[in-house]
Length: 534
Image 1 (spheres, rainbow, N blue to C red):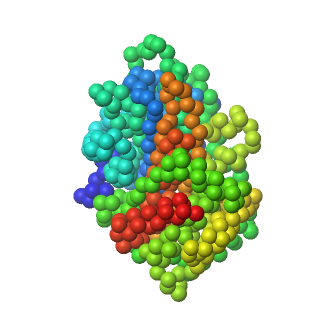
Image 2 (cartoon, rainbow, N blue to C red):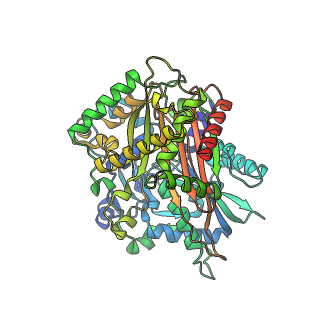
């Protein structure tokens, strides 16, 4: 069996009790309490990427300032989960445990799917349900990651990312949440301060991952002197009376659905991409368990120190006072890709390059602290997708031309926020005319599978200032990473910044989009040089 397929199946193949056996309360009662509800449209999109095997996982590496014990970690996790019960939800697939076969069948795909699956809070979560270190299905991956971590002097690296990138967390597990922690042991192996959060993206995004690590560090600073000898993170029967409701889907608070005028723009942009856009020379898109290569992508890690980041921000402020970091990074990436001579073919048919820029849409909620805190966790994402002329990346060493490009991208972003274009690409999948008359699983898979890969996704989780306590726990470093999955982009650039660890970027290229891993490393090196030189 292919290595990638074996890993995917291994992470799914564990016997589970049926849902009826584990329910302490019926769904009507749970829904009345606000502890169960149907998935929202956006949540359903990420469930589709799981059940149709289009996406594996993303991860967030975190280094804390000091270690914690398993009891302390249990207490901290329990506190965070009680404050944010969506962290311990499960999705209820139809026909569990043979749901994947059902969702691949004509019985399902031949009919519209106006009703989404339900989500509910789990009955019971133990620390062992969260720690990959204690789960047999991940034994080989965990052992390889810990061995490489030790070999690398206790530092996270691209090799470790490559080991864990193929992990798939079962999205309908009736006993475990949609995320895990991989803990790297300290000293005698009984303490941890370095973790990797891994999730299937169901009700989680990059901002959620960073928030979890920051909340954990805050809770670890308020640990009682005496802790119970318990590994219970959550127990619905004993905890439910004090729990808040699962927040409504974010599209109930923010209107994602586009107007007709935007749909025309969406269709015309797609036409331009298909006939005048960049195409990768690599393999066509397949499901993640049908990949022929052991590693269908190349990855590269980059770090910019806090001192370098201060210099970059000063330069940015002096040239373009109102510009944010993402447009600057986008300009550096696209011009570096062009200057490298390793990406674009210069074919007469290759005019445009499509660029997706993601955002956390919780920032578009009304300025109400209580409301925004409700959406601290969740798959609250959106993104723009625009076509840019490849020739516009050819600025050479002309600094004025480069900064004009940065300014242009900033204006595009500002306009996108004003016009709500960050909401509309995913919002098009929420239109009643589509949801009520089509099978969304089929619509999405038909749009992706057996198609050539195209442009790039920029995913900047943001900047996180730490609350440093001299004797306490705080986050020292964060690394956000994901590979390409079966989405159609050829490249992905993930970034996350803290004031202590600086900016970490994990950049991935689909195999075949560049000639070799060495060529991808050369492109990334050119990018870093450009960032620091400007």
